[in-house]
Image 1 (cartoon, rainbow, N blue to C red):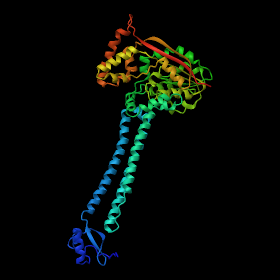
Image 2: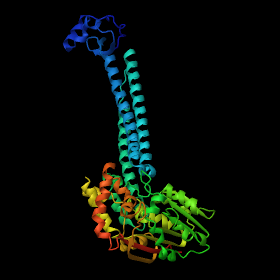
Image 3: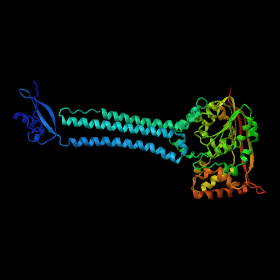
Image 4: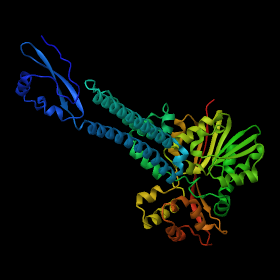
Length: 492
């Protein structure tokens, strides 16, 4: 028969006999010695059963002199993990802000910042949970030490934190993939018509797309410094809105037309049809252009607004689906430069039209100003950029007729007219104009790829290379413009 004898108070020798000591000695446990039992000030009571005739139960006290210290060190470890998780959350959030400061267009898009802030909040919540679990286990252990016999160790806290960390890592991965796929949002939005683009966007996810975003981040319609101003444009490229006779003919403005002008610039092109239509809505990313357009052409029926035309879907007025015509002159080659928003912009043009509405545009086509592009790429290379960096600094996207027709058709347009025209164009010769003025304005984003002190030498080299190529006998300078012009209709 086994019985349990109530133990003696802590720090006092319990009642025992010789047989108890002999039994303890046989087990080799030095803790059974009465002298040893007097050493510990913090003790744990352990009940053992000693078989004899009759069976007698004896208690002994095992000293734990380092228990408090060990428990405190364990809590410090929990605290350190929580602190590290909190710091990670702050770092995730701040990294996105740094990248947004370096590239204002990422902040414009907003998705990266939203994801990073969300992940940062997840990290902070995990830090709080880890700290609370650590505190709970600390006080649980302390309670067990102060109340002998009640010490309970449960692994649920460790399991909980492990699961939470796993969920965090999974959410981090999923968020990054979602962000990269969002970069191909244009393909996702047109999944029913372009499944190949979706597959390609998925394959090119993660680091590749982030690298492409950094390379293509410069938006020529709204660079970090105000590149496009009405004054500079009038001095260096005033011929652009003047060479629009054929495009205006294709627009064929009617008194009932509601027209959306994408990349309206300073409003000079829009002014060709403002007086002949019911209303016009001009949008451009340059605040200088829009201010000039409002001053010179704004009215109750002609409204101009600053809008990043790569993200047309963010403007409710654009996306009302009631426009009779969406038009664009000499702007799409800049707006479509970013491959991550290219298709989405054209899709937004389609969605903004009423059934039966027309998309009428003119832009640079394949081979446009090829001599200037080659000279600038070479000058940037000589200024210290790699050949790939020099190419990526280009602010233009000049599509072929084949690409444009295939893309518009895949988005649902019925292409009625698509033509390419080689049109050598004479550069302005006034103050701020000429080849140098044109390069500083039109190629301004390429100059931003080098240090400020090198910009003048790049412009000078490009001008020297191009001088004999574009200069005619009378001293006038002509660039080889290739115009891609089209009319596409949204089905009824």
